[in-house]
Amino acid sequence: MAAFASHLHQLTLTPTITPQTLPTTRHVCSLPHVPPHLPITIPYINRIQIVNLAISGSSGSRVSITEMEANGAVSDPEKVRSQFLELLRTRRSAQVPLTVEPAKPVVKPFFQDVTPPTFSEEMESCPKANIENFKELLKEENLYLHTEAGDQGKLPLLILSMKKNNQEKRPAVVFLHSTHKCKEWLRPLLEAYASRGYVAIGVDSRYHGERASSLTTYKDALVSSWKNGDTMPFIFDTVWDMIKLADYLSQRDDIDPTKIGITGESLGGMHAWFAAFADTRYAVAAPIIGVQGFRWAVDNDKWQARVDSIKAVFEAATTDLGKKEIDKEVVEKVWDRIAPGLASQFDAPNTVPAIAPRPFLIVNGAEDPRCPLDGLEIPKTRACKAYEEAHCADKFKVVAQPGIGHKMTPLMVKEVSDWFDKFLK
Image (cartoon, rainbow, N blue to C red; front, side):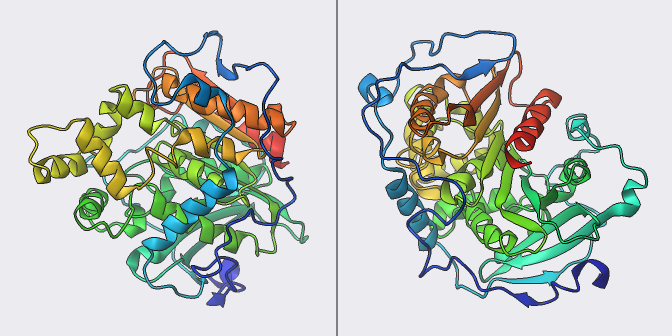
């Protein structure tokens, strides 16, 4: 343990973000600010790329805002970000100093699946440098980062990097797992990035991995949030952890604080999306099968697949509301309760373009029912204009793999790997 964490043992950090001092403006970093959004005269550019297949855009289904709004400038990014950070503050437990303590490697990773997964071609497909004696040269750190009081305020970290004699600062990438999985599931990706010179960080999201105690921990947390309104287990509470994680990573001697990236799969993709929106210290982001238009899905009756992925909370709400079945009203009320603003001011049309000018890659399946492409038309349009205004159109890209539903693929893994190599190396 001392070999990899002696310099971290009971290290107390001076947090750069606290409930009282959480900034409402961008964090200091090497990236320029987005200039004020002025009327756009450049033509709209369709930047959704379906590999080997061209598309013309929306299928014509009804959307929840007008065409003028769709083609107009996004809401003030700093105002929306400030509102989101204020929301995160409102449901925090008592604050504690941001501290790090050593942990032991997890011998038996905990999955909230009846049949735990054993192999993933996608996880093993990430480009990896051919290094002799790789295992001997690999440095592993198992840590806990305390982000707030309570059991869920203890963030487990798995950090992999290559042992080096020099003090050179390296780029870092944070990885977030999908629903019911854990950080150990990400190890093939972490090793691949570490072999290529990154500091690779895997985390357990709230109510997952070491932060779960049963097969129903996450489901129970969602239902409790609906009934009590005191936590935000769907996306937002883990985003708070990612802000605190950025505090810690920015102060490590081996990480370049201007070159921290973030990615994730499915639920982890949503975490990566909102973390990049909330905290500009995430210099590059690439969520995988995790970005959707929540308001669009409600308005266009395309909410069923997303609801089915966490159905227990919607079933509880249906009963409490005296309904016979889950309907649009139930869906709206659940989102407003467990993730306020998810289907309104913090939805993709406002938060995706607010990430400009930092590089942002969205990778989805073209047939994904949880993240329908039609629901990304307005966010894509607004983001394209924001990046054009910032004179960095090449830093925003949407790739949709044809014939693929809600599934991460080797092609997606490669796209994300190339994205980080392009913008973090």
